[in-house]
Image (cartoon, rainbow, N blue to C red; front, side):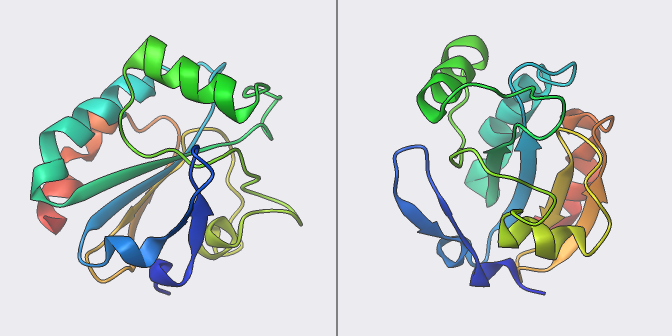
Length: 151
């Protein structure tokens, strides 16, 4: 499986092919603005600031499928992430990550193993292959050894 075959729609409405990130390490996260794990945005932003020059790209994919914890529209989500957590890493427009309408990227990443909650994390190596999958309780700072190994 290579993620480079997929694309997403940015908050600005632009189609972004993941092939733009060929040769980078990707951290793909399904996010939410009103979740107990929402403070992880700060940790993700810190990872982004620390490692982006070395080739890490973090992409947040807002999702409202888990107890409707991201009910806002795309503009509200973008504003919340920017104002509250200073997020500068790329964000997708809101998507589904499970079920019949799941974004094809997440269908591929989950490989039939349902995403259980917000802030599931998928670490992709420089060849576009899934290296690690982490659940919601794995804090961004706990990913450092895994990220450094791939960088």
